[in-house]
Length: 232
Image (cartoon, rainbow, N blue to C red):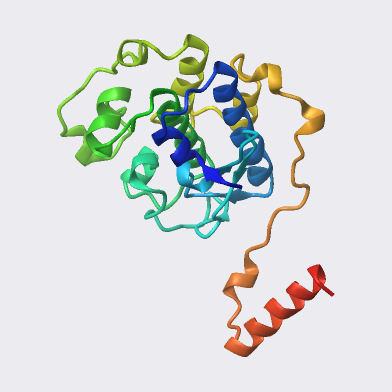
C-alpha cells in the first residue's frame, strides 16, 4: 500500500463523494471482522489506515489491540489523543469496542473537512456533544455547562447523511454509540453494504500467547516456525 489516509487528508488531492463513502465503508467492513474476533484495535487514526492508488484501504498496526472484555481492566492510555473516546479521557479502565467507533467518527469527519475535529480533546468534545448526565463522574459535574453544538451549524458543508452517521458515532455515552453493524446499514454507506461480501471472524482471537513467559530463544523459535509456514 503506497499511502495512508493521513497523507490523503493533508494532500491537495480532491475527492469525489464516492471516494469518501468507499473509504468509510472499508473501515467499517474491516472493523466488523475485527470486532467479531472479540478484538478492540485501540489505536485507529488516519496514519494506521493504508490506502493505494485504487482507493483500497487496509487497517494496520495492531500493536495496542486487546481482547474485548467488559470484565477486565485495561490501560486507558491508548489511541492518539485526537481520536480518543470520552471514556478514555475520563481515565476509565473498562471500555468496549465502542472506542473504535468514536475514532472512526473523528477520522471520517477529518477526512471530509480536512481538519482535526477535536484538537483540544477535553474542551472541544464537551462543547460539541454537551455535558454528561448526573450519572457522570463527580468532578465533571463541577465543570461549566455547555449546550450541545449543532454539528449542522459547525460543519455546514458536510452532507446531511454523512453528518447524521458521524453524530451517531460521536455519542458521548458509549452505550448509545452506534455499532459497526448498524453503521454499515446506515443510509449513507448502505449502497455498498453487502452481507455476502463482509466476512466475520467465527473464532475469537486468543491473546493468551502474550501472557506466556517465553525465553528469548523460545520466541526466536516460534518466529522461525511461523515463517516456515509461509516459505517452507
